[in-house]
Image (cartoon, rainbow, N blue to C red; front, side, top):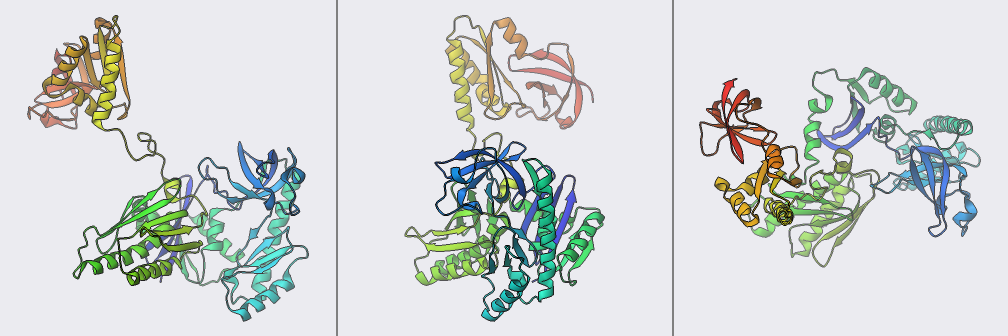
Length: 551
């Protein structure tokens, strides 16, 4: 498998793609105004002590507070309460353990860790550990002896998985780098007032430290200064010289050049197509993520059970990939296509677990439930991709749905009747989305005439493109006042407007709008999409007619 890393800087953001056989496997982004916080070290100040939760909120600066439990204090004794361990206003060094999610502040710890390439330094704990992923007992013993010989007194070390097979000199060099980092952090902590940032875990450094393994053959960057940072970083982290660093100088963006921009766009879709013609539907909610598997276009060549099994096997592999790419964490429920055969179910579970084995983030597959759903969990390590790249829809407020045309129209009609019940009201003006306006007016203004007959009031309806689908304004007043507001043009006016579309019932005419008011433009169909100067000929309740005097 060919593995490459792409690092791109555009405007105020740095983005990183881990590419496996040409396919985007992991994505990271860091914006100048939105730095990732996990691993950052702060000199914080205790804002509130919460005895009921045995925890405290720690002020980090810029109006942000982090949550700190008593168990995460290195000096707390077993059974000691938070009130005994901390007091309000007390300064202390803390590290971000878990990213802020939604309205929940970041989870903090007082047990500082400094990860390097091969080692993790625990400056406040006397502990020695070897990564559980190193399974060979002889190798574990060898690394334990090396780590024991270089471990500073009263400090701890954890030997990382990538240290497997490394000699003592590499580990000692990595430790020297970490001790120097810790010294700088302590010196800054003594100089500054709380709250203050002491150490920032930059994206490029994390990528070089965590993603560059023996499998990575190339790192491609698109800025000369990035090239220098990467080369220097690889050297400081004792990386093997087999990694080729390339400076891309093409005209299109690096992510476009590598085909990653399109893949990233597709990773934001709910629907994911499978090679066999089936597809996944991925739904993200606050509580869990549900994934539905469908056969789609795939009908198979054998019996139905074969079709279902093949689709489910492909889906299992793609689900593992999508969880990693989208960084989906928490509870995940998968609705595979129904299979009655336990053997087929076991095949699908085995394929899912095999595909998940490539994921460094901890996952746990619990198996099929009595309803035929697969339950699994994936550790939350950072924000989900959709939260990083997308914002809640301002129309539906994140629900994925808006009210139907009939529903919005019914709300408007209800408001019209409420205002019409007031005796001093003579006329009513409605401003709403153009499609809703057309619905209210009806064919040949039949709906509008019915409304006027039912209310006994003069009613004007204006389509207003600046209003969102569910928003509208209903204004009441005297005939003169409402008529003046309802008609933004008068006979003889000359106005500039864009011909937006061909008239539905008269293919020679075009439709323009002035402040949402419809203008029927004679012989305007040929100028659709162009700005023209119009002379208003006649003004009616719901539209005006005009001729084109200048193109």
